[in-house]
Length: 153
Image (tube, rainbow, N blue to C red; front, side):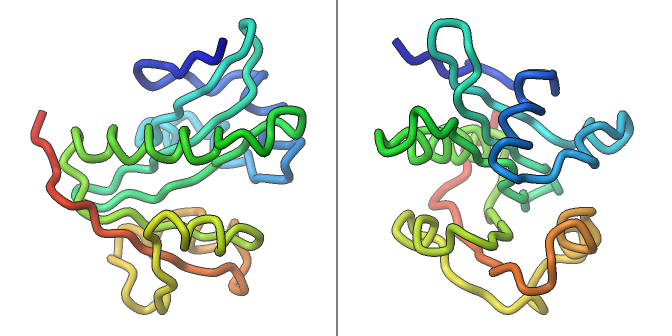
């Protein structure tokens, strides 16, 4: 049975292995100062990490990042489950807009309410993030989703 982490988890070797297997960047996740603003949520099956998603918090904005599902578990809607989990967490934290960069999954995110946007509309805190400013290529698709009503914790 699949188990979602109820709260954020620490960056760990299982998360790193999954992200590297799906060719997602990990360098900034190993930066102790930088990772304090990132919340990672995992999905486990039989105590093995098979999915991960992250929120990089910037006040009322957040960057969705590091969404990955193990190849053996794909095609079951687990990416959607992880993304919805991150969106709910973001709402609880008062986030009003979610942003992301993708090189391969624009259609996936579009189906879930994200819209392609011009990079010039990115709030300064998002534009200055390591993902936006250099880790993701300039050719990555920039997307945004406005959350309905954020829930104050």
